[in-house]
Image (cartoon, rainbow, N blue to C red; front, side):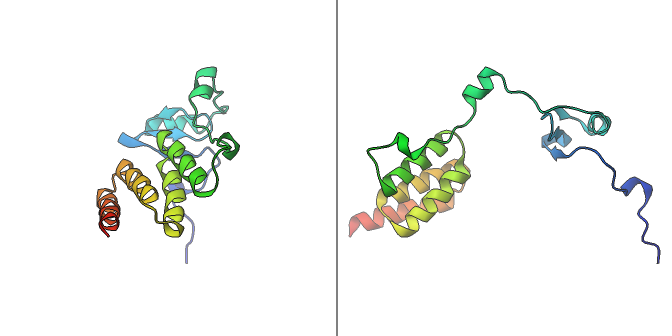
Length: 140
């Protein structure tokens, strides 16, 4: 039995690239974008991690410390943190926080924020179900 891979499929040392849209590849080291042919060439040359300039550092998403909300406690702090993540476009983090909070405290404001996050993620059916749940609860 021959287990030898064809030469075009052999593992070779190099860099890791992330596939992007339109067949482009992003180097995981320097974060530069290449087409397939350029990525192949780039994988054989040394590169350095991209240094962030002052603008990128200021624009980078930040994680606020809960101590930034000293007047809040418990679920309100979690909700504020989730809102922060949502405004930063980190909808997965926001959804994870709010899912857990909505399970333990299904208050209308928690369900509404989770619905807003789902809407931002394009999960319209899930968002609609949560909004409906809030409306039904308010009618009781």
